[in-house]
Length: 219
Image (tube, rainbow, N blue to C red; front, side):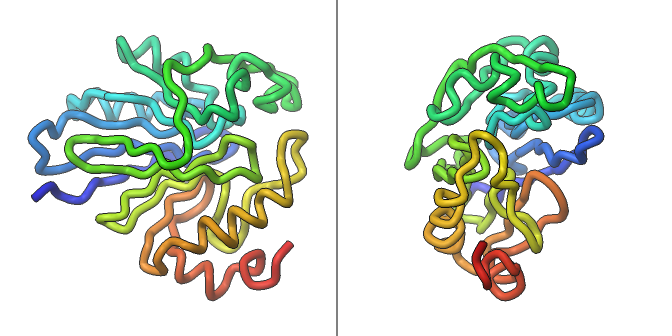
């Protein structure tokens, strides 16, 4: 039986963006890992991968806003052959500072188009563990959750935070989509699911269902 995936969090850059290294202890290939999101100042995360002799199998992106993609090209240079996966709805965001919002920061950032696109319902495999790709638009049009049902864990980007939700006032955000995503998609996960958001501490679906004002009162 494959062990539960381990999700290591790295809080990167001035935006305090949570980026992740996912491994599967006890797997037949324990060196294989995913990097999920790669923000500003990623050196700490890169050193973690190298010092543990991990081998990134892919760089998955929950969405393509600047603080989640600022280190993508550095990762491609650091880890030969690394392939990037992004939702189809954000095709073109990486190379476009207006779409990825870096133009608003006064320091445009670009990264090359991904090697692969994901869509809702896709299943990705890491060392025998299966992860569902769940489309979660609202904060951004191609926001996704990466859900490992067997261990009750999900990486959710800027969709849901402990006590809050991702911003919905950006040019490519949609309050209507976010309402559907929170109510119909995220809250459909079991209460025991641990969620790893793009900013702030991990939490659970049950805790947010009971206490998050945006879940309780709407927005």
